[in-house]
Amino acid sequence: MLQLRQKMGMHQKMTPQQVQYLKLLQTPAAELEAKIKEELDDNPLLEEVSEDEQLQSDQNEITTPIAGSSEQASTESGTAVAEPIERSNDYTLEDFLNDETEGFKAPRISRSDDDDENSERYQQASEESFIESLSMQLSLLELSPRLRVLSEEIIGSLDEDGYLREPLEQIVRDTSVYFGEEYTEIESERLLKRIQKLDPIGVAARNLQECLTVQLEAIYDHSPAREVAMEILRDHYEHFIKKNYQVLAKKLRMEMHDLKPAIDLIQHLNPKPGAPSRPASESTRYITPDFYIEKTPSGKDFVITLNERGIPTLRVNASYKELAKKKGTNGAKPLPDDAREFINKKFEAAKFFLAAIYQRRETLLRVMTSIVHRQHEFFISGEKFLKPMIYKTIAEEIGMDISTICRVVNGKYCQCDYGVFELKYFFSEAIPVDGGEGESVSNKVVKARIKELIESENPGKPFNDDKLVEMLRADSYDLARRTVAKYREQMHIPVARMRKKIL
Image 1 (tube, rainbow, N blue to C red):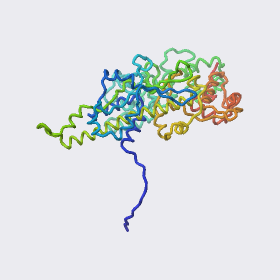
Image 2 (cartoon, rainbow, N blue to C red):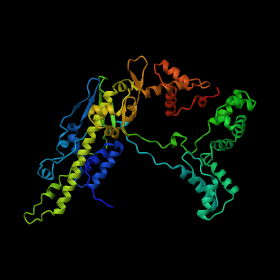
Image 3 (cartoon, rainbow, N blue to C red):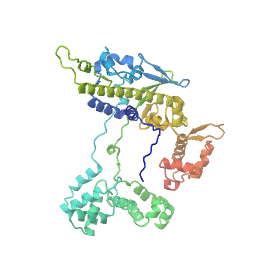
Image 4 (cartoon, one colour):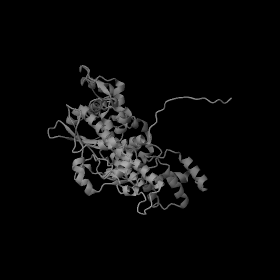
């Protein structure tokens, strides 16, 4: 039986203005310009301040926080920049119409660095894709139309590393159903072999063993090392991938020094033909820093600058005043109610967008200032002095929610004397230090030490995890073996057995 019931409850709901602010907050510098352009196209009441006007006002509108070791932050500014955000909620259309100034305007907090080569933003070059390259090479094979169809299906089934993970029989079967063509097993295998010899050689292999074998077969220099390498891949592949070099040498009836050239030859082959193999062909990802951290002349304090290069200064278009003021005097027609309502709606949207831009700037600077304050030793002396820190610490220090800190940190970068770092880099777990009376270091410092130890090891006798634990304890880092193994895996460093090399 249906019943009607009343239920009271409290729900938290964000206003559209809050949603807009949060979206802008998590937008990095590289994408902010596009967001502003979209808003300019959508809202006719928003306009961009001209370069000449901006040059006249820049010296009074640049805000630069200073962070040092002894104080949280101070702000230098020629004008009060908080006015727009304070009056944004109460500043109405009528105020705008009666305002004799240029209208509600968001102040600019930016860095004027047009001549700074290090702050250039680069567009990613358009490059020919891996699949497009293979398709173009197929046209040179002079295949019949039916084989061209099958070859396109094979290439389309490759994974990002260039391997054919889907069974060839399944691809042939599906192609036969979709295109009404019949292919024999011998015919499809021969076609696959031809595809595997395209550039890069070894593409469309079904496993690593086949990939390496195809590449070795393409080497026309029939040296002793190549012949031994072929025998290793053909008959002793399992021992090779497990790096059981002593067993390999015994089975091949060779000395270790005679085995080394063959092993080196195999290890110089390309295990991932689909991945970029040359720096010139790599799809490079360029990073635009959101902040610049620079030392003051004293070398103890820092100037934090928010990167808004290329970001326009916005204001409400004052030309709409005259349009909205029309009262129908002197024979002129009054502004229709729907037009006035449209102007009022767009004015409110412009007002809150400008306020959101300003709030974004203020929040980003507050978070970055707090990070620099907490990681002062890192910015002075480098990576080894990174301190453990969590989001909650910054949130409590500046009086914001942890979710706000997450939005600021995610996808944002800062440039300092030691390179460009994602803001996430400055947050890490704490590792206790023996004898330090409660002292701790960042787990990133410990990871760097593990990497340093591994790089200094003898390739013929690499350190296992137990040995790494022992060496870390000598540095006062008391870690369990599983923790060392976890850190090693996070850095994509294989186990000792897989790092072993023939000297």
